[in-house]
View 1 (tube, rainbow, N blue to C red):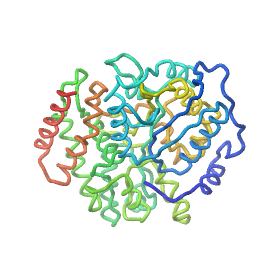
View 2 (view 1 turned 90 degrees about the horizontal axis):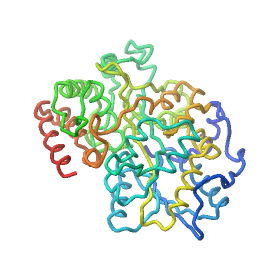
View 3 (view 1 turned 90 degrees about the vertical axis):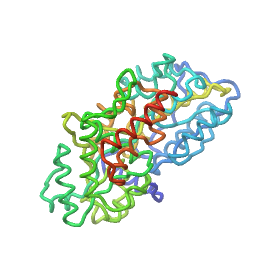
View 4 (view 1 turned 45 degrees about the vertical axis):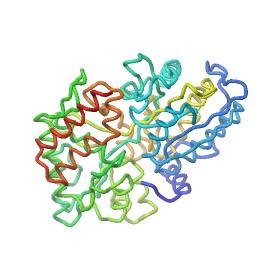
Length: 438
């Protein structure tokens, strides 16, 4: 999902889509006198975060960081790594007790080493009261039920929608995107028949593969574990989800078993596939890649399955601070500053909602309703589920996700032609071992 620099495009398109502000039109934010988080004398910070697939995300984040330094005198060094590299880098820092002060990481990774992280409860409470409260996933991924505290500060998610070509869908007999999974399968078959296969990652893609497989599993009522963390993956509901995925796989382009998080973007942009699931980057990239065809690209809320409710899965990102940091107050003030309105309004607007904030107050920004193709991403956290559902969020769920247990189960059925009952048993054994040692 990495693309060339589109800074100029983002600035112009944000205005065209009804964005409220552009770079340079906002005053430099001052240090909040009423903030309870006073940076330590002589403080400096190091942040490790994932590399954005939308250039304006990093651009505005960096500019807001410079504003923070100007307002507080606290310099911040930022290291950007690929999505797959953040988790092991953070784990190494936790092990050796040295490295970045702050990590902007993925999903429930903070639960792997909660004893290494400072308590973020005061910051979470402060920001929740100031910005309309938190979506449920914030607590699922950042509040550790074992240690009874917030071990990470919720940022938001890189939301998911189904991306498709309207013209090709119309040729297949669909004037609007289906509302349920049965309808989506019919559309996928129609696209395939007309020479436009679908494409959903079945390799170890942190974002793309985990997102769609969890969505389908939950859509049929399947679940990884029960609330007491007993393993529940081997079920009729999971079997039905795998059968659906097998049929959907028959409409896919060859090679999805080896796809990473950039592969579907490339295939979609090249016209090799007519439908996939992705963040908003895949949509607006087409404005510069192929302006004539851009109106044909569309995004839709992922349809529901037999459970009759939306079961969206997203990549949730949060920021946690290691106890070895000499400047925990400065770290908290930095995060407060970056997610406060003068900074976050512009950040969300100029990246066209690439990151959906976990704070509910930002759902009112004009950018979300400026174009119907942006609106699905506004609602990415409304009713979203967490990995490990319906079990207990924590270390076991984090490790199962990191080891791609569910993705491999789907790949076993779709790619390796394994019987669903055997794939479920294989996943069940893996999960049982992970949950036992967690």
